[in-house]
Image 1: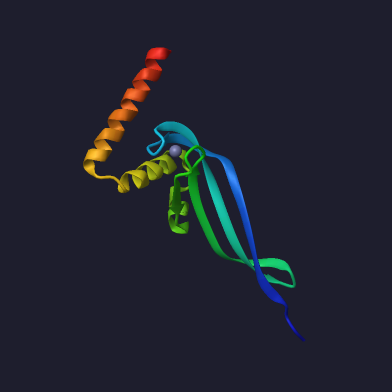
Image 2: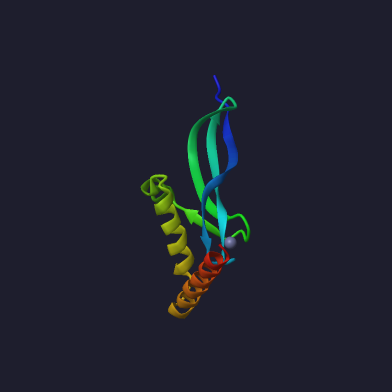
Length: 117
Ligand SMILES: [Zn+2]
């Protein structure tokens, strides 16, 4: 008796995952959830999800943020928590001066939008 096993990789995008302000391209944009799953297969049947990788990326500029599996579960698919996570992760790469500048730029942008309405 012999067993045929292998690996199969599956990738998919959830286009309308969330929408929020991107501090990289300075606009409110859609963020896409990209998921990669590596399966262990037996006789060409996907059996065990061995490795799952998730990241979200800005649809406009492509700024990508990895979401570890435990973090993804803790976000509990809550849009508010996901938006906070995206903002915190984008800010983690910036110093205080850059953060102040980006917040001011966002406020000006929102003010301009309100003035047009
Ligand atoms: Zn962007």
